[in-house]
Image 1 (cartoon, rainbow, N blue to C red):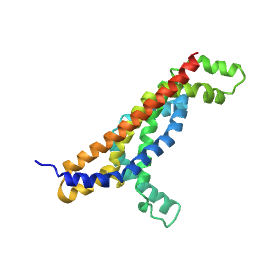
Image 2: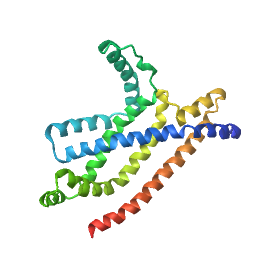
Image 3: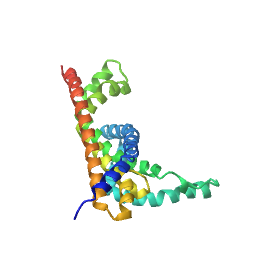
Length: 237
């Protein structure tokens, strides 16, 4: 079997056009899910009875189901539910099925990574001694100020390795967005391969692009860890 090198080169150029969409899904997911996950983690760390149990159930359910099943379920259910709410409940003449499918991709990945990041931040908060919260309150700081200025910076330092893993996994998981009709890396490559059944060449292009992207992400986190380690040493001193 011979690889069609010409096809690989042409398809690679097309695949590169899908990188902005892939990165956009990744960044927006982290920006939305990250702060919410920190609030969820704090609620769990402080043993909030009702909220803590609901969050625990949510995290267990999401982490216990495959992301591909979540995509199939939400992409099948959410548009129909929104259409019912818009037309039958609100009485508006608006077709939600015309929405950009990337909106559903945002929804799925935010829901999924909210659960993952909640556990990441919960474990990071556990590395910060509870006495630091009490110390902050004793010097007149509010609870919010203590978290913002003392606890959260230290927790973020501890969370960096797991944040890196989560980001890399999210970046790779966006390859499943093609199932929702999103024109990202995998979708573009599969479409190009369908004409001549050059799927092996297309998958090699996908493999190469994701390998480069994930390597860049890991290098960026490594640089951040080096800078944050200096901050951690300052706090320890």
